[in-house]
Length: 66
Image 1 (tube, rainbow, N blue to C red):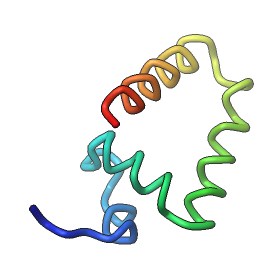
Image 2: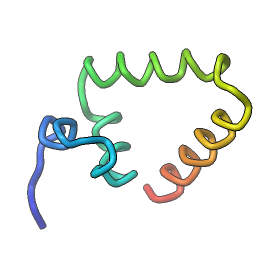
Image 3: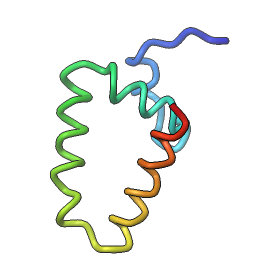
Image 4: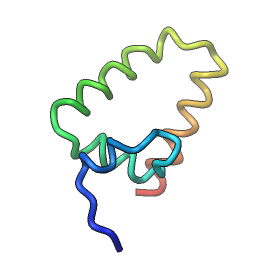
């Protein structure tokens, strides 16, 4: 297994990150990642219904994998 820091994970393009890596980066990424997560969560009420449903489904899947 390759040892990666959260900085290494965040430097990747989003499409190359596994959901588990995204979860780890968000959880342990420090203030920068906390701010990013808070910004995304603040946008949820403004998302179109289909995007919001997809986002919620993706987040449920990520949490089920941890």
